[in-house]
Image (cartoon, rainbow, N blue to C red; front, side, top):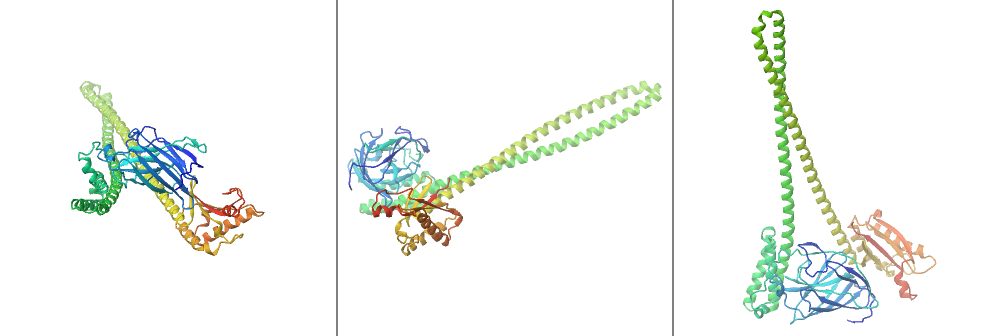
Amino acid sequence: MKKSPTISVSVLLAAFALSSLAFGQGGDVRRKTVAITYLKDPVSVTLAGTTLRPTARGEATVERWRKRNESEIDITIENMVPAYNYGADYTTYVLWAITPAGQADNLGEFRLSGSTARLKAATPQQTFAMIVTAEPHYLVKLPSQKIILENLAPISKNVQVQTSEIYFNADSGKYYTDTSIPTIAERDYNKTPPELLQARRAVQIARLADAERFDPGDFTKAVTSLNQAEEAFRHGAKVYDVGRIARDAITFAGTARDVAEERAAAAERRAEISRRDADVRRATDNASDLSSQLSDTQSRLKASEMARVNAQDQLDRVMREAADSRAENRSLKSENDRMRNDLDRLNQDLTEARGRISDLQSQNSSTSARLNETSSKVAEMERMEREKQQAEARRRDFATLQAGVAGIVAVKPSGTGFVATLPDSFFVPNLTTLHVRARSKMDALGSVIAAHRDAAFSIEGHTDARPNADSFALGRAQAVADYLTALGVSRTSIRVESRGVTVPISTRKTLAARAMNRRVELVFVGPQ
């Protein structure tokens, strides 16, 4: 691989929070580093040690192969120590590619020979940062908090550096709690196959994730494979055979951890919904009790009102009799006073009953408001969960579409999705008609796109400088649109445009350059 210092790179800065230990408790983690856009020529990149290992360093050569849509990496790291020096949880080192979109790709593990190691890897990404972390095993899906090396911006007059902030998800570290160095002697530790050490940690992490309960099938397979590897090692089997069995254990354990965490999160969501359903039921029961109490109080109030009316009638009758017979007034006065006292007590009882009714009505209103609020929160949680699942399904569907299209024609990422290119060889020379040789790929492309009904894309025609450039480019784009719709792709999801000569790939006048400019691009827009 060439290591020419002549480079044409646009550099983006990725940014995480510069402290080498600045991983949080999990989720989004901010860290500042350099992401480089690799174009064509080989680029030499230096990796510097963090505060965890300031003397560590690395040298990498990265070369972008556009036709293969991948970036080749040849990296050597030096002045390293065994990973267990950062805690018994760690057994190996892993190289990561971090994209500006926050995606972290595991590119492979380093196998130390003394204090150095070399790794050759490849990634489809064109813009990415490189970091090296200490990990419990080589199949981890997110980088740990132990960042040992990170790349620096290349020093070249051809490189322009701009700073911006990006984020990526890191492992929460909740299963990496053993900060002690293993008690086993280093010479004995080094005699143990690395895969076996990693398998032990992978199974331990799966157990901490409660995989025995949530995914017993994969966890049992992981434990069985680990026991087989341990047995083979004790009986002096070849390191290759021990490593092969241990890798199976790592794979099963990693799957068990992922499944267990997903199922545990789902169980927690179901428990939360059950708790909220119980709150709703309790609130409903309380409302029913208050309504019953209100009904009873209203009945007592009605009886009190009737008693008051009767007492008033009796008082009126006594007053009439007193007018007719003043001689009996003195004997009836005490009875009249008693009746008045009874009436006062009844009026007082009526006032108190009305007060209790008012209080109960206030309580009922408050309970109804809380019930409505709880019901609204439950409905909002369910709506958010549905939207989250729908968004995740759209992202997976778009990723599947991109992978399917990339297996047929060349694709490149764009700001909101990706672009698939149909070269000049897909068409009859100097005509807008698709060539018969391209039909097999066009059939495959149509099948992939038709399988994704929600895919939205535009078909853009490009050409070289010629008198009829716009109509020629539009004709080729329309020919592709007609062919795809004939294969079942929805016409409403396609927009056909001509870009003519406005977006050339090359400004050279050679036949090859002109052929490169004659192309049709399918521009796919990802879910928002």
